[in-house]
Image 1 (cartoon, rainbow, N blue to C red):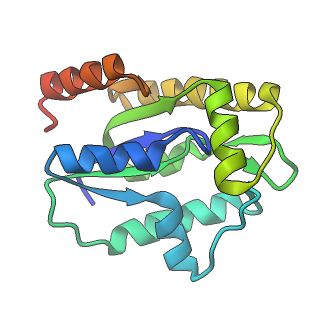
Image 2 (cartoon, helix red, strand yellow):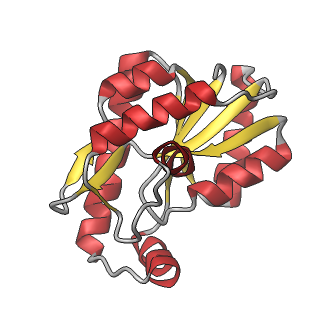
Length: 178
């Protein structure tokens, strides 16, 4: 899959909803990393968000993406820069995975800690401390910046506000991505 925009963000930040909005506004196809991995593994993720074998799952992601035959010129995938491992630690996705994805643009979605906690409690019945969610989101942003620098690709930090949506539209337009 070429011409890939990678959109990352922690669980409950609103990535999938925003990807769907973008795919309605722009001529692009939207995919979920979790769905791709689940399809290849033929196994659903548990709702606790802890991932037993992060590296193996990312290999499934690459395998799944290679099987997708998208007719869109631009594709967007929502996923993560970091995940929660089986010991409840924040763990970075391997740099090699991002190199294999070859994204043309990186976006990291952020939101207030309270909004994220509310979404996780409502959607997944999960309770996380505000400190953990804040640390998780900060690590996601920090690592997204490192990946963007390593790949030499643009990064946009998106906060789900009308102003940020306009800024992202201008950013994408100026880059000539869409």
